Length: 96
Length: 486
Image 1 (cartoon, helix red, strand yellow):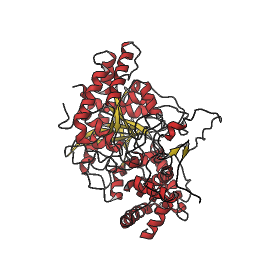
Image 2 (spheres, one colour):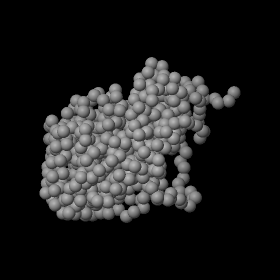
Image 3 (cartoon, each protein chain N blue to C red):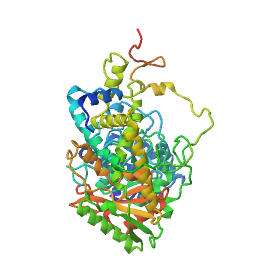
Image 4 (cartoon, rainbow over the protein chains, first blue to last red):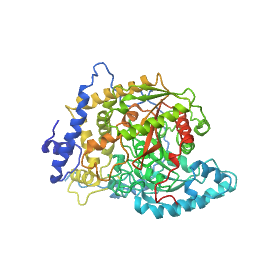
């Protein structure tokens, strides 16, 4: 599996990552070698094998009562925001 | 020479009031000040706060209310959220992030009265095997400062190896505790998936991540595991099972213990000198009365490729939260929302993190999802079944932790696949969700190597006991790197 520079650009777009034009060839090369490496999975016979998503196989997901367990301290959380004002997160204008 | 004692000895001395927490804390802070400029093992050093905590611990001990770990200094990997303290995860993305709350592990160690010396350097978002992807620069290996300490918990491992702290927390998604522990000659344990709470740990790959501890000895690790492990309702993957008193169970006899050695671990790729040292280490168990036999993990070679589909897929999803809006890095003068997302992420993440996000995005994208992601979930089942089959006839699996001793800084940074193969013996353990350890098992060309122990699900107790029994017969774990002895 070999990725072209255009493939890399479209993956970067999907992942919302700005990649400098001069770095594209290096990513194409490295990502291609990673995909080539993982392609060896194709040889494994998995016709009758169940997929697993996590190691807790057969353990039912744990649920709890829908109760309030903590008070949200908005100011403390928003202290980490790049731009916040009057309790709101600020972003560039999305509508004219 | 306070730093040459084990954590268990320090804890006993504190209890007997032979030493105060303030004296111990000062001794380690002085070592950090002296040696960290050479190693770069710390992102944050908490001098004043640590001394304050130490004095508080001394009062608790004096009042006779101390627990087994009260006043013992330690370090957190910078992936654990610490309220009011910068939690960077080794990334420019979180360079300005001050955690608003404590991780459960942090809370538990605080409650036990342990003293926090600082936060350890690490590969960015725990993605790396050499600690060279950190935004804060690489960590050096104290055994040879031109070599890597391993990763991603490279700062934790180097700090313990240089005796800048008796213990450091760490996380292991595909070997990030065991591999650096091996390359720096210290003891590291990755517990069973679900054993230690992950609440407040920055997520990398949620079906693989698990937290553990790096220490000088298995006894030290056992003491800390008893307070770290246990159910936490705030982590939906936390398993509700009683936590044994690991330290009390270290005396278990090795007589008749069935040890399996996977023959695939000794195939090509393993440095012959590491193979020989590993076989010598296994002989120690035979002398203790264990029964050693060959086992097979036929799908072993699928573990690294499986890991490099599953882990990037989960990372691409987990790291979608870094959007430059709620916290973390934001680019300058975004023209619109898309530009804000793309440049904040493009500038905030380093190259390896971007590679993994893109690999994950690709394997999850329409048209490739079945061929890569579902396929890897199936080969993951094969890997897990191999271990389950092996554990039908053995109690413990032993082998090398890494194929070679520590490599040179810069040696593998241009070739991600070669770097990934460093964790060839480690990845499968995470995919299966089993507990694993690495303990010092000798030297090759003057560099430490690790013996890997793999236990059955939730059988940390037997694994720790086996590590402890080995350390009673050997002194590798007491060796200090040259220049760091006093």
